[in-house]
Length: 94
Image (tube, rainbow, N blue to C red):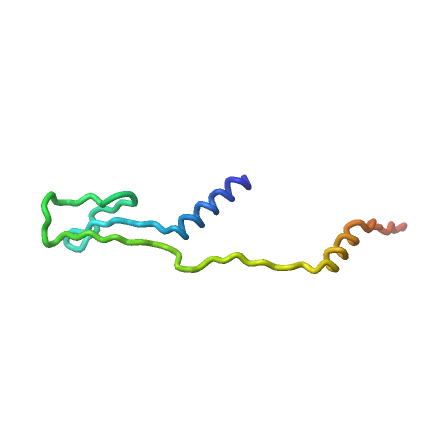
């Protein structure tokens, strides 16, 4: 389950950063066909003045950079000491 969700997130990220190109065919101002791969199907065999094709590219325009952060060694050592400290639970007698 965890692995499949990671794959889905990775694919969505790659799809967003590389972009999706959509080819569209319009006739009389109405969308007749579209295609994600190749050219959209035309409604007429010869070129007419009322038909036109459009190419739409959807892509994320942000720049992604890696970031780093440092954890102080004192805080890590304090955390390790805390993890190895035995936990004492008080018992109440009534």
